[in-house]
Image (tube, rainbow, N blue to C red; front, side, top):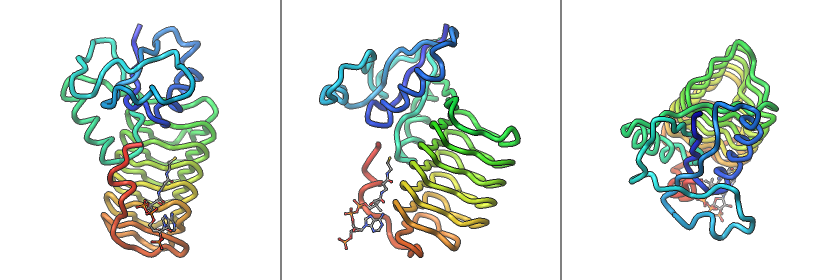
Length: 222
Ligand SMILES: CC(C)(COP(=O)(O)OP(=O)(O)OC[C@H]1O[C@@H](n2cnc3c(N)ncnc32)[C@H](O)[C@@H]1OP(=O)(O)O)[C@@H](O)C(=O)NCCC(=O)NCCS
């Protein structure tokens, strides 16, 4: 039996724990082992006692043959760093598609993706490796989401749009059809993007204007 480890024990980690319970509980080939987090007391301020604990940190945890990993960290650059660090030590990331998500049969999903409840993935879209979609996030037909991309709850990438590697959409952000969002760009919560977005920029407001990235997402890992 394989053993599931959730990387990140913050809010997203606890959400992913519940998705894993919803998705794998009747599947006898995997059981949940616990969390990895570099802050060993991450769960101690949380008011409920969880049935699962932090079993190590991402620098020193010794990967076991039967371990399988889910990445539950919300900052795309931190996601990339953690995947590279853990894969070097033999970690194998798996995907989780919540049973209440809709995934078109013609969509292509890479490895290590997490698809939350009520997310929708339309026809012939592509999700690259280690993409995460939050509650009700939407990927339109023929859209492409690059590696480590994060769509927060209710964010939408419309049909034909390409979000390059490390893209981030805050909650209720929208990118209109057939746009190109450059590498490592951030679309702020509630922003509506009607044009291409340059790489490494923050898009803010409606209609979105582009500027330098602000602090929150550069430092925050969840
Ligand atoms: C854009 C963002 C990254 C900025 O965060 P920050 O660096 O902490 O910036 P601050 O909150 O200090 O705000 C700086 C200024 O930008 C404005 N601002 C912040 N976020 C904004 C947004 N989404 N839309 C419009 N204006 C915004 C603030 O009002 C403030 O304006 P002021 O200087 O005139 O007072 C952040 O607000 C955001 O949208 N994050 C996405 C969060 C999200 O959806 N997470 C999903 C987790 S489930």
